[in-house]
Amino acid sequence: MSALTDSPAWKKLSAHKKSIEKRHMRELFADNAQRFDDFSLQAGPIFLDYSKNLMTDETMSLLFDLARQEKLETFRDAMFAGQEINFTEHRSVLHTALRGQSDTPILSQGKNVKPDIHAVLEKMQNFSEQVRQGKWLGYSGKEITDVVNIGIGGSDLGPKMVTHALKPFVTRKINMHFVSNLDGSQIAETLSKLSSETTLFIIASKTFSTSETMFNAVTARGWFVSRVKNKEFIKQHFVAVSTNTEAVQNFGIDKNNIFEFWDWVGGRYSLWSAIGLSIVIAIGMEAFKELLKGAASMDEHFSRAPLEENMPVIMALMGVWHNNFFAVHSHAVMAYDHYLGLFPGYLQQLDMESNGKHVNRDGETVDYCTGPVIWGEQGINGQHAFYQLLHQGTQAIPCDFLAALDSYNPGCGHHPVLMSNFFAQTEALMRGKTEAEAREEMTAQGLSEDEIELLVPHKVFAGNRSSNSILFKELDPYTLGALIALYEHKVFVQGNIWRLNSFDQWGVQLGKQLASQIQFDLVDNEPVVSHDSSTNGLINYYKRFRNIEGNKLLSCDNDWSSLQEIMEQEFENKS
Ligand code: F6P
Image (cartoon, rainbow, N blue to C red):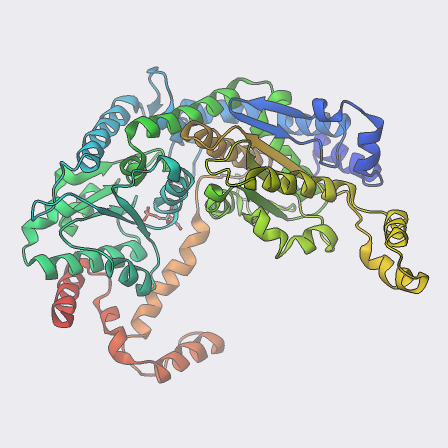
């Protein structure tokens, strides 16, 4: 047993679970007419109803005890204060400082981070205004019409999700593109639509060494130089966002075109930093500041509200309850909002890269489940795809349902009908349908006794399936900022309960390491024998049947400058 599962608060929850698992939420609602009022709250623009979770007052009180036992408030305050809580990388975790509205100094390694934040924001503002107003001109004097953000992970998912979510606020004068995939098809498809005269590339990479991003950046540069035949023009068409200014300059980007950020901003928490440059170009600095303000309002709520009235804390504890005491290790996020279509994918990195870990802060292997599998979709599409499993499958997967009260495109009655589905689904998951109800329904439909007997087991819904409903007035920048910060803090709280460092990501290294070795195996067509039989077999199958011509660049071994020249030559030959 670990110290956590052996702790008083954990043991009390385990005992309590045995009594509550026999209850049905139908009864809990019938017993307490105030249940909705008791278990719902507003934090800034966000309303949360968590009453449709299998829990009682006692459950909540035991969960708050667990949070206190794990010194949640102390860890939270340490994060906001800039302490090096990411101890495996010796870093502060200060994405909250990027959106903080006060000028009170915040120190990371003894240095106030505020002046640098303001300076970069100002630089982003000046640059983005020039681009948006058509004053930043391409090499031939034309305005920028297309911006391509090249990045991956946090340098892609956040800006892409926000730009999509705030589409009604995005300028129609500039087309935004996001390229992350190392499959050359994505950049090829993107470039095929663009003109070198009017395209601006943002190379977004915290480390400026991520191979997916560097390959795509080199490809873009090769495409550009082969067309314009003058490397001087790179200045007007390439900018970079990075902590690694030296590598950016080695790549050939002008030092004035570097938007800096700092190692105390984690990749998956970086959309608030200069990584948000594509967002600022899309929606303008005023709207970006609203996004920051919305997030700051959630920071304020998280840092000040008592745990019992603290939205991120409550959402996190509900997750812990299902994951650790009901052994459901999956969590679904259902957006009833077209513009939140990329939100579940964004949350996957935020949550799974933060809390998908099997050792605690003391380096001990844990004996409890940590981060769940996060997945999701547009809810209305999911209803016609996988909701069958949510309603009648063998796992009771907890879900978050998200919707706006008002749509930017209400259509001809689309929105109320969409919302009727939103309300119906959580009700159906909670209530289910009893055998008696199913029989009654079929009798009313005039079905024969035999037919009823045949169908009744298939028509029963156990119900008692937990969900959170999250509502907001409309998806504007302020609200989106608050919503993202809500989930960031939820992830923080869960990581704290599970005694994890939520801010490193060593788990992504092994695959990267092996891939960089395997690149050498793929240079020629000689069979390899150095791996296990499966990996050898797959590599050798690939080598035997591939077209070697299309793979020759791999021999360059990440030497970006020679790769750039080869790329330029490649494009030259093709054109
Ligand atoms: O996937 C690992 C990771 O390091 C993420 O944490 C990060 O967001 C992504 O790669 C991209 O990293 P970079 O911005 O340094 O290119």
